Image (cartoon, rainbow, N blue to C red; front, side, top):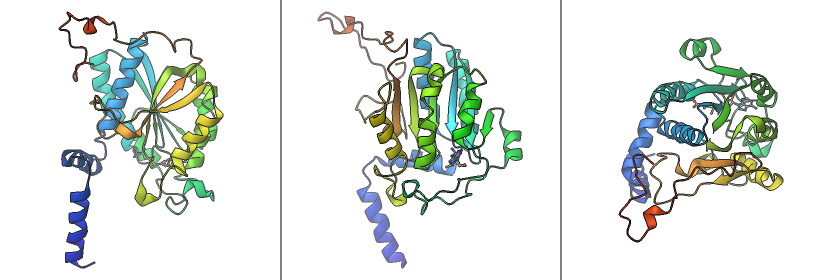
Amino acid sequence: MKIIYKLKILFLRIVGYEKPLRVAFLKYLQVKYKTFKPHYETVLLESCKEAKKLGINKISVLELGVAGGNGIIALEKYKKSIEKHLDVKIDIYGFDTGEGMPPTNLKEDLPFVWKQGIYKVDKEALSKKIKSKIFYGDIKNTVGDFINTSPNKVACIFFDLDYYSSTKSFMDQIDSLREHLLPRVFCYFDDLHLPEKYISDINGVALAIKEFNSSNVKFKFGKNVDHIMDFKFPLAKSLIYMLHHFDHHDYNKFIGEAYGDDLDIKSTKIKYSILDD
Ligand SMILES: C[S@@+](CC[C@H](N)C(=O)[O-])C[C@H]1O[C@@H](n2cnc3c(N)ncnc32)[C@H](O)[C@@H]1O
């Protein structure tokens, strides 16, 4: 491409970019520094806060799709500070074939985007860098192994398996995980909508979520839409769903802050704090 034409495209991209450029800057930092993942940190933090409100001090966090391990390394870094500040215990678990993306011919998996064998894990190198347990093997065979370890309750899940079929394979096992979940589980989906990778609501992860929601009554993934009061999830706003486990014995347990006194006509109390809430 000629430089003049490249500049024109660059101009269109910058001028047409709808988010503030500071958000693009944060995203740039995340792309450049692979273990800088503010979305992982804040999802983990908020899920620990939810657990604590329910009276639970020990939680598990899952990353589905580990590859080189940047996500797990980031989580181990954030675990340290969150454990210190919130007085919780966090166990991190990863799941990966270890051999990279599995073979597939399913058009919903976008085999024209993801190639079999990419993201192969260097297990030895990774084991020197992390302490967390990684379950190697196809996700359809490893969720049971995780259950057999009698884990602490799962408070959040980072979905990064890329394929529709792999994501669905995990979702098909959610019922078997029911004893090990919080009533609501924060779920971050890394690959929900990427136009340049042809990912949309008719394939990939979004399709797996849609099918899960239409075939389940006890569990639903609820989409958190962007809201003016949401200061909590930098780089993750439209990528978070909440897995609701409606039959959970603690599902209706009150953990809110709406005591009503702040709305009393004489009250000067401010309910919302962007720092502490
Ligand atoms: C994009 S990579 C994960 C990147 C990683 N989360 C990070 O932050 O760097 C996707 C991974 O999902 C794994 N994967 C895909 N399908 C799988 C399946 N059915 N079972 C287990 N792992 C799978 C692949 O092996 C690959 O390593």
